Length: 411
Image (cartoon, rainbow, N blue to C red; front, side, top):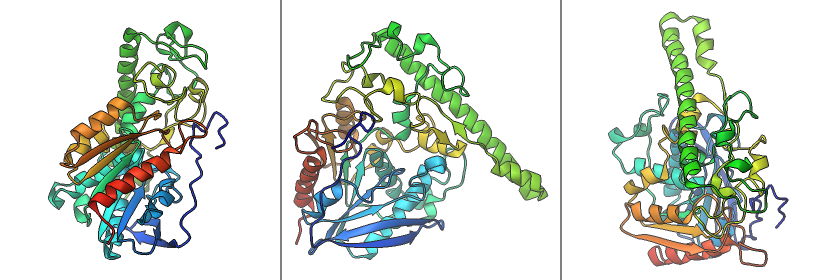
């Protein structure tokens, strides 16, 4: 498994699919007219299909695909309308994309459809199941910015089961943990106040590979400052969204092209320095088997200043829907109490985004009467915990297969 220090085990090659696998590509149209694409892989005798999707990533060749196919299950992998470019990603619209996939699989005649959420796919899946369980009148009709998204007008079939692998708390809740609160000028990626700089030795940072050590007072101040920075970006996003909405209203009344241009010119938010979770470099915080480093690599003190990062470029609508822990709806802890279908959570012991306390809390607050929580060695993206060990993806796939066979036995 190649890892140059920046991949964090992200690039794990999936195993080969069974020889008798049939793969077909499909294009679906959502209830609001968007186009999404998916791959259906089937093996002889499969009556249950696993549905894999992520709000931002391409799951076409996800590491769980061959693991589930080899155990006799069909697998559907689908992208959202924003896959590969989350600049305009609205989680509320992504639910319409998920709904289109569920409609398609039900029409194909599968006896059971189980939704699988890996990483950020878990919060998206729980959000879908929460909304699908509601009557059309009770579902959300707008994104957090006020943009209309009529979930009540969509057919939203319920899944028969929900499986989660390495579920982080949701894009917004995750960013709240990762965002660097020492930024003092949102226009300058290098600006920092020393008092909150997570990578300043005076605050407890140690040069890698040695683990840093932050005291409780700094941690409390740091986390409050993280929330405050999110709130400041929220305020700016709401201001821009309100300006755009006001221009749309004026245009409907005046038909003035200038108002139409203003409505479209919402601007793009640039959010610097989003690789600064203290747990990435202080392994005594929420300890598990994780290696030093973050989801982006082994040197978060460097990647924090790079071009990669969650929510780096985003529209005001997308920020409020996807990246704000304050305004967003796709929050795993908020949605799980409304999820009542049988549920399994597979915790990877070396995860850098779902920590032991997270996994325990998620399993405890689930609204399902049938909840299973298992732990397997592995890292967030399914890589083995250490060289020479079985991959976390293979171990997780085996646990999922046993769970599925007990509840949806193959005929």
